[in-house]
Image 1 (tube, helix red, strand yellow):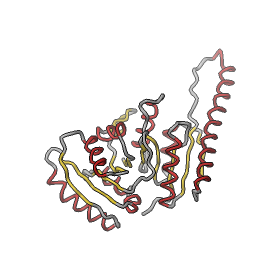
Image 2: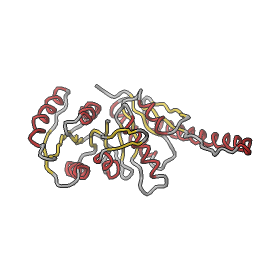
Image 3: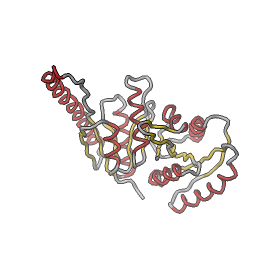
Image 4: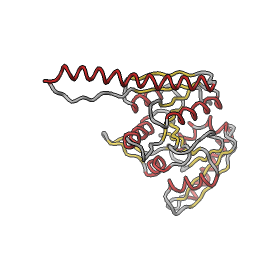
Length: 278
């Protein structure tokens, strides 16, 4: 199993340059194609029958501006890929809102790369909403980069957060290309409500499965008296991990997205890149 195509979000966010750099480095290390998508967003103008003509002119001007900005983002991406010597890359402008655009393009990609929302930036709530939608609705795994810090290496030292759930199993399977390239893999499970003894044999089964796929991993069960998200980040720091692999939990209830506590906690407080699968 290997990744053959990565997808990265292109926009005018100050974090886009770091996201693009991380995506290019990962594409080079995994020897795969890198695609960028620049969603234009959509125009939402108020309905006013008496001003229909002027609104149409305004909409046309606004639409041209949105498309021009998306074209600029794709050109910046192409220039960066050429300068970095990326073997295979492409960039497209998509006349769509960002979240559905990423989810749709992810269908024909192996991994989608986005950035955690910066709580100090304007539009933080919209950026956070975008990440949550992509994580919850994407058919492919999502790599979320922290908004702060520089990550020249992603996936050299990996920590897998394991709870024997369907989501965790999906995440480990989706992350196999990263795990097979990693120098070190640590699988950690946490006791909750006395489930430690039951997790031990399942960890042994996971250990064997990873070995069959060429991944050497250390496995352990730990006990923590803090929240699971904080426990994950604390252990990742102790291990010097540069990537956390975990299942993401949540469901769509009518039009409301409901994320699990650990998933929402990691998305808010992450300090290292996290690969999530739902």
